[in-house]
Length: 301
Image (tube, rainbow, N blue to C red; front, side, top):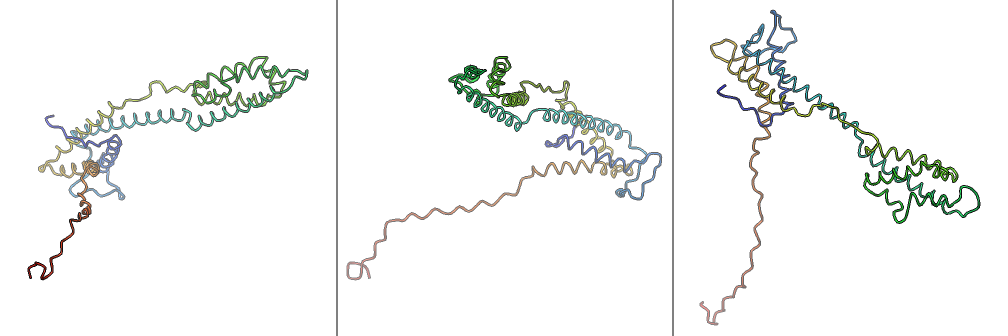
């Protein structure tokens, strides 16, 4: 080709796919294979355009290439959109992360209060001894850290909680929990810990589907090239000496002309606005006027 049409700069994939559908509808309206007649409810064709058994070969071939390229582009976009939606669905939401963090913090605060209460008992000879509760408190909330670990960044907080949860799983800690009635506190703490780990991805890994489509530039380029070729072939088909050729070209190109016009609307310059009136600055007061001398005082009558 010695010349190539310039597609609108704002053209996007949705425009191309929609244009394909519009042109497909027009081709179906004008092409009636095997002598098929138009139905009563069919939209009338423009004056000078008659139904065809098939498109002219030099239009039909580029049309099929454009149709195939637009279909491939549409399929790619559908797969990519589906994969992205799956990833968003599988990823934990910020709302869930916030709720899991709050739940974990509240459960640790409640457990600390229970443990402090047990550690504050006096030694009465019963088992387990309050000294065991004090031992557990020192393992979980040592000074000066105390409960500050629940205010750290998620990764720092997680590492601190994992170490403490391992301590709670040990036989000595379990004896303190059972002996001082902390089983309910512990059970809720375990649930909150699991929720925190899942929400922040410490215990559940969400992987993107392997081979998911990401780069649609080849499909986009192919669709644009096929569109350029099709428009040129349809335009070159119009010849005043070929009956119906100009009507056919105008009929098939109408959606493209409409699309180009729609895309050009935002770029058209808005009419220049009349500049707003700017109030004039107040006049600067000059020196007071000197009154003229009265008659008889040296003035001129």
